[in-house]
Length: 501
Image (tube, rainbow, N blue to C red; front, side):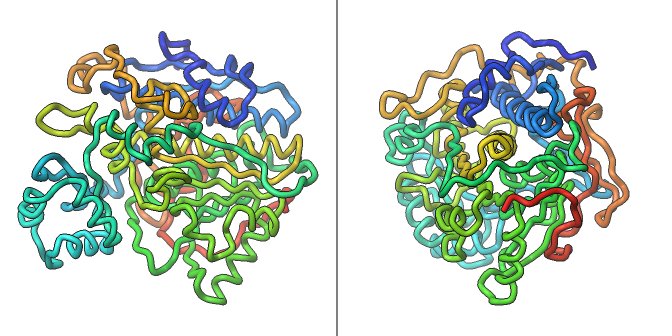
């Protein structure tokens, strides 16, 4: 496909995330965009967010490739068709012809006595805590749950369910979220932060026999402690670019094989219980030779295992630590669990995308996917900066921060109280109104492929929208299909490149 700069889709759209990650603004001219028009239609600029996050990720990959290969930064191309397809990759996934299960019956909107609440109960323990908070038995039907919600106040349900360890969020408008203490905390922070930690270290030697323009992350070892979509999208992208990615899950936490089947491409997966001495020793050995640690747990949840940022900077100088959270690292909700669907409801996105009669949703889990590509970009930029200056890096991003960016029309956060919710631009129309504007130029099958040689059988899946540096600009595929969750040995692959610490 021939790529050209599409109207309203040029590289400056990526200026805010690129600046948040400390990128050279002059490099934004290296991005070309194009492809089918009218995708991911919504009132909010969802396609612009999607394109921008993929663009900064591709540009960060090109920058690292150039640094390692000693050549000028190559141009990168972003195809809107590939981006839109990848942002709903979980809907395109087929495993031996079977569509994966996405949301459980109790994960949905509920009408309350004076508003709406959205719950997340995909995991058995979250379902059990939700029903317990409502005083209902384990076998309660959705109809019974609806009856209880209809008699109670939305915010009261939110607090009661949270106190029980469940997940429920009251619907708010953007203005109500701005007035909320957590909304104010998110608005006061940049879209993402990339900081140095600890004592200075020598620049990282980035030469590696396996590195090339097409595999800028070759030789990097990435420990992946993330779940669901955003974090796994980030590490899936790093695996595409050549990193050795090992996902680590706690054996006592349930996880969806279907979710891993979509985001586990290019990775290996193992299980370790950090609460046991033997598994903790194995994990520490892995961490000692890791270059990157990506976490997706609530802020502070892993501190008891020696994984607080300051402790890591002291024990593993030269590490890149990337932290993903739902609500950010400050504010009264910073320690709460959260998912894309819930963040959309709390921040006002569901109100904007809905009608006076009922809430709506974005055409994709764009907060998850967008934050995932942003996180991958931050890791790549961190490695590039370490090659020049050394040091330990701490990268932080949140779903709520990405939501704030979307609601503000793509402007960055960090402006404090004066950055109140802005009116939605009338040029972004509702998804149903744009459905006819796609036309016949968009063919999703052009951005899908089938992978058969793997333990899960035949998998139909989306290709990555991050085009490999130095390639033809088309969507790329991974070197290996996903395996069964937790089935791999807790060890690194053999490699020839240097370690960071």
